[in-house]
Image (cartoon, rainbow, N blue to C red; front, side):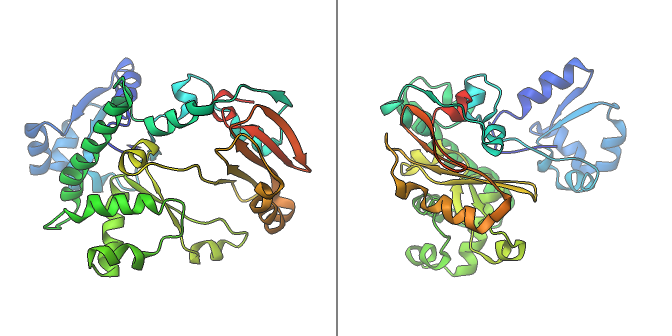
Length: 314
């Protein structure tokens, strides 16, 4: 199952790969097809060819439920910068291996904000101007809330959801304080929790759990909200650079700190030092990404790396 937000490019690769191999494409966006599957899910499946691509299967819950436990799930996000540049992603491999060769790269300067604001949705990127990107993302949010969110819930009034999403984007990469989110809307904490879950269900919002060396502590700590795509966040409010963290398996841990500045100071490694202390021998490497030119070592297992290395490779 290819799982991800609408218009992130799920159908196109499925058809490109599947139809070459003899798969038949079936879309439940078509009313007649959906009605037939709803009337007799078992009979509908029995009549399918051995190889079939089922699109929008979530619109037939009985059919989607029958697939639970019998399929692998591939999460598809909007395009990353390396994909847009048609480059094989090697950044994380280099990070965990600590292999960033010393070199000079050209500063991005004002260009740094452009890919962040543009986001990664193919349809949005088809627009040639930033204004069109913003309009597309605004329309996309409205369509998702009026369409998929309404399908997932029985909320009578969805007016609060766009404003909640905008407020959540202003809390991006901060600890999720439900009481702070509930206040402006005069809603209960439980209602806000439900609304956030709905926004996550349509991939507009994602809660990122904190890293901790103890797995139980991770579960108990408060997550941080992130937008499903930077373009959506920028269309709502605008977005600053933020720290990222990625853990590989249960063994190695590496840290990334992101700065928009063109220079790096000693204090910029403060968070990475805390991570190195907490992770102990599991700490592989730490880098500060910045909009500067040089890739240079800063201390043992620490480096300063130009942010463009994320999509261009080391």
